[in-house]
Image 1 (cartoon, rainbow, N blue to C red):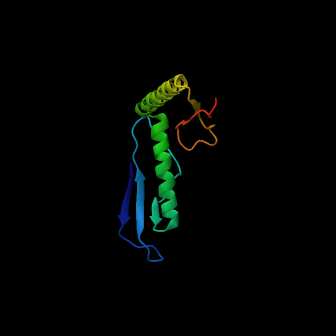
Image 2: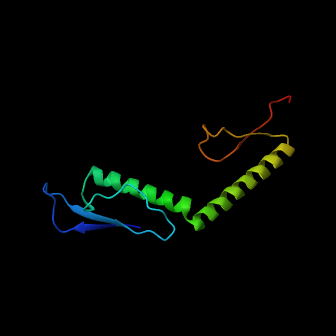
Image 3: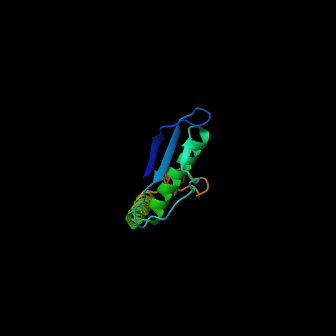
Amino acid sequence: FIIVSPVAEKSDKGKNQYRITTVRRHGVPAFGPEFPERQIFEEGPYLRKFLLTKLINAERATVNFHPTFVDKMHRTREQILKNLITECTVNAKKGKVVAVKPPKERVGAKAFVQQPAPGN
């Protein structure tokens, strides 16, 4: 969790300030960016960028290292692969050509089916 609390006093520039702290479960590694010494931020673009970066890194740390999420992701990927194999096998038996975009061009994990050209 990332906790954002307003600070009563305004900054030298008259802007609102916020104290930010994080809490994580046992087993989830620490994630950046590191906090400044005071952990107090003035509202503005730097605070926004810091929070977004912290949130993305927190999610990645949780998903990539916590056993619960690692197991769920493994099962999900395995099921997607099984479904893709089944779909390709069924389409191949029907005489349809199945094409999957190479990873660099792939937008999603979807395959598309091309009908055979007339006369083939």
